[in-house]
Image (cartoon, rainbow, N blue to C red; front, side, top):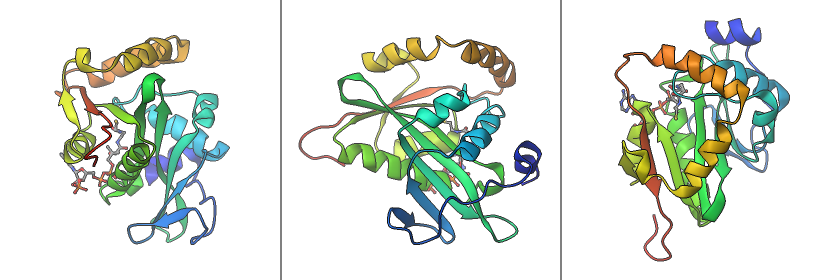
Length: 207
Ligand SMILES: CC(C)(COP(=O)(O)OP(=O)(O)OC[C@H]1O[C@@H](n2cnc3c(N)ncnc32)[C@H](O)[C@@H]1OP(=O)(O)O)[C@@H](O)C(=O)NCCC(=O)NCCS
């Protein structure tokens, strides 16, 4: 909570009232909405992403440009609803979808919110008959990748070509190069390794 307040000057207020048509009530007091990020949410996420060694980060315009987005809203310590986290997906070539960002604000962690975000994003991509890729070094997300039957590997050679092409494009950014240097220092000797997870869509016997 303290950290969120330091960054944003307070929690980012919830975007809509509970029970709206395209929202889902999942855990007690947690709602997921499929939508684009609002400017205050993008602002908050942009600052928050700077704090994790696990994600290189995105500029605010890039965050606002994501179209496959799930936003979690939850009750904070003071009982009012606020932006609690988000899962952002990118559609790549050849029917691949990358789950690119899973982020839960520190004040809302350990309540199963990332499980809801990740499993809902995963199921949404499967419904759209997409192959799914995720790269993560977070034990929680790796646990979810394995729980959902993704084939995991430490070798990026196992990642699909669509992901390699996207990664080259992704790194053509001065912002990301700066962040890559900073995050390399943050990651130094913390013992966590990146793992790629792949789940191919097959016409029969899915999920
Ligand atoms: C990683 C992060 C998204 C987890 O969010 P969270 O809402 O606190 O996670 P949850 O409470 O939903 O836990 C997720 C799952 O991990 C499990 N888990 C918790 N701690 C774990 C650990 N140390 N090792 C393995 N699994 C763990 C939980 O039991 C849960 O699985 P389940 O639903 O099968 O029980 C959050 O800490 C975060 O935003 N970190 C910074 C950004 C980041 O690292 N994102 C991932 C990069 S891809």
